[in-house]
Image (cartoon, rainbow over all chains, first blue to last red; front, side, top):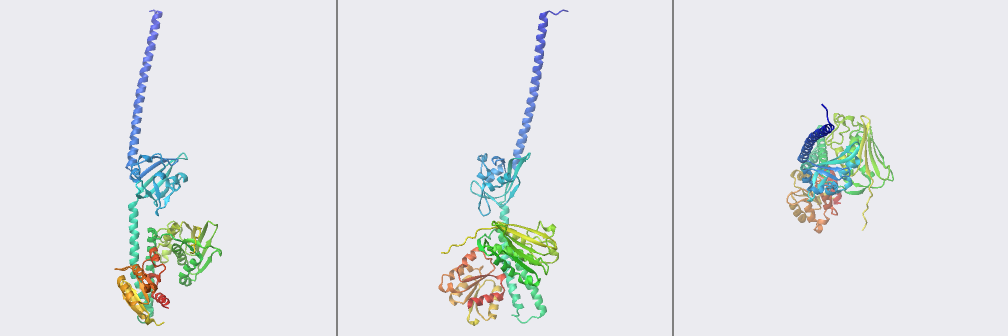
Length: 408
Length: 125
């Protein structure tokens, strides 16, 4: 069979059309598949998004996410409810819309806002000392946790999670008020016992023999320990409640140390302890709260006396490294704080085993109080201690200018 | 000083505390008068004009701080020495209330009877 030229041309055209058709079908099949895949992916993404959104909005805690500049890019329903703000939050800084205040009502600046701090310091910031002032001016006590989001070592944003802790704070307050009242009521019979035993001991109700004197002295001492414990509990509750407002007055710290030392004279003499004071002669008056400062010195010095074996030495020093801060150092050659107890030493009611074994009485409240005072006065506290060698407590405070009252 | 010529008024609502204060002060030869609440205490103070008043703060009918305030409106009341003997800590409002007044503030648990008697003596000279 022979093909004419026109037949060949016709066949070629047919095959071309066929190829094109084949290609067309192939392409549309591909496109359909792609479309389906795209649809599937889209549905999956939407499902995931809905799931995440449902999860974030169902969380009882407020969640706010920002970009690296602290600009809000997301917030959940709880955040909206707790802050009483709506969509207008978007694109603003959290610190601009949710004003923060501390426990005394002092305004927390934008720079000190936990979210901002977490971005600047590149670390998690946790606090339960603040409350939000909502849009409707209602105060809301919150626990805040702010965390930077770091991708490939670069900060891309931050997340702040906050929880309403109004109820917890209320319970804390009730607890402290109870301790305050209970302590006051407890003191009444304790002072009466104290005075009656004192009268018996001094022979007001007739002469007593040696045994009677010994037993009465035990009652007197036991009662005295109880008084100390109640006083400590009362002070702790006052510190926790914040009823001990800081009142700055000029203080001669050397005189205050001497007064506190005098209170411990009998114990110092009984144990034949050596007390040394290193206080710079030119130390100016310092501006601080006298009640708190006295309580702080009483606790540190009493501890040193109590936890140093007979014949030991206690050194109380004031160091002024620079004009910005002064440092109080109370060092002893005592039993020391065991390494295993060192991280718990400032915990309320904690007592180290080595001193409990020696049957040295104590409430476990002293150092908790000291730490609380130091914090309220804006200072720092730390210590160095080795068992059976001694302990050194350091407290540093910023120098505050002494404001003298003008004479009228 | 002839203690028997000195009259001390004890205003204290706690019976056991009041009894021991009366007992001790009588043994120390002072002349003692007593009241078990703020209102009675104020009446006795203004009618008997004692030489010194021992005043509790937490009391029924009239608190110690109210007694103090009312006494201070009177010329004699301004001058009479007062020892506030209480279990309430030196809270700011107490210190504020006793400021510029002829009174001293003692915490019951921090003072024994001997030191209280010394304090009374020093105020009566």
